[in-house]
Picture 1 (cartoon, rainbow, N blue to C red):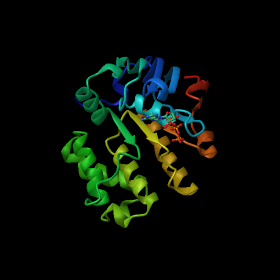
Picture 2: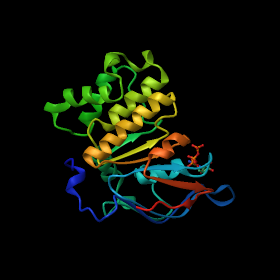
Picture 3: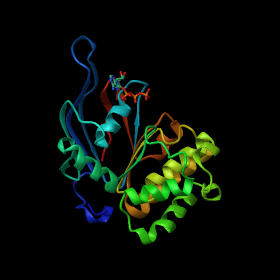
Picture 4: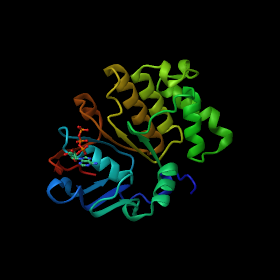
Length: 239
Ligand SMILES: Nc1ncnc2c1ncn2[C@@H]1O[C@H](COP(=O)(O)OP(=O)(O)OP(=O)(O)O)[C@@H](O)[C@H]1O
């Protein structure tokens, strides 16, 4: 799969769309309905925050938008392509080339330096090899981690590791960035700097950002807020 830029898609189709999405974990007496009747559209080139109490379904929804998981019912579309029913192989190929992920579970490789982690991410994304060094260094600079790029994750603080993970997720300039609490480990100054980097990529490249957050300052900066309560949407964005 080749890397497509945001500009190569038709502008009318929302980048993400869900239709009647429901997600149930487990079966019988222990079944938990984490999401129900989720119908949303996210326009290309926007920044969207998912908010809601702990257990309201934010991470479950982000996992479905990233095709890391499949809905029990309903459909998830990315640029009109139904990603929710692709095979695991096609879903991972799609993820590698099209999106950037900042998820706790997608940790850094402890034996590699910060630079090597970001550069490795570019290789996985099958980006143009000639540009890897420049792109990795530039992404580390965006998040203020270039001076410490030779350090390995265990030598970095939690917030610094988070910034390296963010650099890795954005280095290939994905059309879509999905991030679970990307600023949770950062102090408010650094959190805002990271959000400014996202905003810049949105403005310059037409990237779309969907992130979960509890931070009221970030909710002020994004274009739309989607609020979840007990697995359903209570505030709809206007794409
Ligand atoms: N793998 C799973 N198996 C069973 N139940 C699950 C699973 N994943 C999530 N849940 C349940 O689904 C509901 C939504 O969880 P989710 O992690 O999406 O919430 P969240 O809004 O992201 O919460 P937090 O802010 O605490 O991360 C919760 O009741 C949770 O216990």
